[in-house]
Image (cartoon, rainbow, N blue to C red; front, side, top):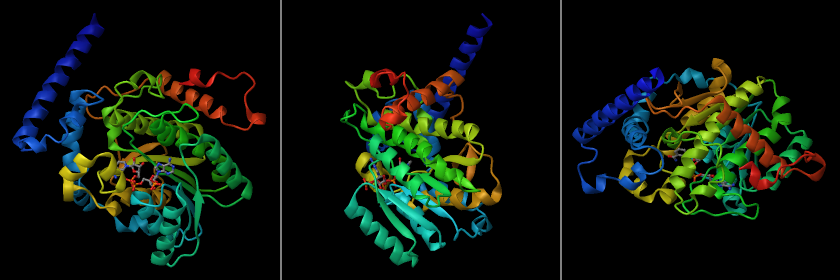
Amino acid sequence: MQHSNKCGYWHTAAILVTLVVSLVAIFLGLFTQPEDIMSLKALFAGGTVYRNIVWYTKGMKEFTRGGYETAARNFNDEDLDVDISNLSYMITGSNSGLGKCTALELAKRGATVHMVCRNETRGLKAKDEVINESGNEKVHLHLLDLSKPRDIVKFARDFVSSEKQLDVLVNNAGCMIHEYKLDENELETNFATNTLGTYILTTELLPSLSRSSSAQVVTVSSGGMYTEKLDPYDLNLAARQDKFDGTFAYGQNKRQQVVMSRLWAVKYPNIHFSSMHPGWAATVAVQTSMPDFSAKMGDKLRTPEQGADTITWLCIAARNLKLPSGLFFQDRTAVSEHLPLARSHSSDVEEATLMERLEQLKSKFLPSEDQPTEQLKLKSAF
Ligand SMILES: NC(=O)c1ccc[n+]([C@@H]2O[C@H](COP(=O)([O-])OP(=O)(O)OC[C@H]3O[C@@H](n4cnc5c(N)ncnc54)[C@H](OP(=O)(O)O)[C@@H]3O)[C@@H](O)[C@H]2O)c1
């Protein structure tokens, strides 16, 4: 009885907050033009209407270029006053956008940079540009498609056995694909790239990272995850394939990344983990996956450099500032993983289920000698 009263209270409070936020948004003029109802479909798709309205209102204030400029007034330049010339970084998806900006910034500071890209032409061009602009020759290109689990295992194991130094892994590669596609492994592409690829690469590189005295993993998530509550029971989104929504898939994947990062922090105390939201930045991904949003936002979008700022800051300053492991960041500040009253918290069981299922899935792609004896069928792991 007490429980249902409590639920009723939160429900009423949530409705009231939704109404107030909607009114404030209308008065602020966010939705006054027909074209301003920027893809209302996107606004209301996936998570609850309440979460989407609060997310959009918060985003207009904080995730934009203006939001960055406001936050940057409190940045401390000395945070980045760290010698990283003896450190080695690996950045996935570093041929464009935020990943490339991060690679360039780290290369300019004299670090060794391993750029992990899937396309040779784009990768070589980006590598040459990073070397030319930074004057640093310690920049290496590796070809890897993060949606291909077996290739990731092979790549990571080759890297580990090469005994190359690795201090920091930046999980940056990501995608938002609006069509439900299963690959040759029966993996949905957003999940395979954003979640499973990140999980396999990170866990397989642990032996290399563990050799570093200040190992770190930075995962580039997204504020898109705010609209979703973790659902670990349909990772491949099979139940949603008929009315597939790429925005929902992306939000789920980005939520999964944040949960993974926080749980890894507990499991591997010798490695520093963090996840982050770059804000809304003008990159190829935003232009191609969210063309209406990109056009509507125009110069309200951050520059790629502004979007990459917190990635770079975490790569450099976290070791200096001795930040706790496992946190989620925005604009150089640890922030909540949840919107207020959004009811997007997941239980310990749900979070443990996510990790178990990812581990089960990963095991399908290991060399036969490393396969667990009692294996579940691939589909049963989703
Ligand atoms: N820009 C934003 O406003 C924003 C907001 C929130 C989160 N993010 C996140 O920021 C990260 C970087 O995105 P971005 O905005 O900088 O876009 P971007 O310029 O398009 O960069 C995405 C990178 O990921 C790579 N990639 C995609 N799928 C891959 C795969 N299967 N294997 C290997 N690499 C793959 C892309 O390679 P190709 O060039 O070969 O496609 C590209 O290098 C993503 O994780 C994204 O979700 C961005």
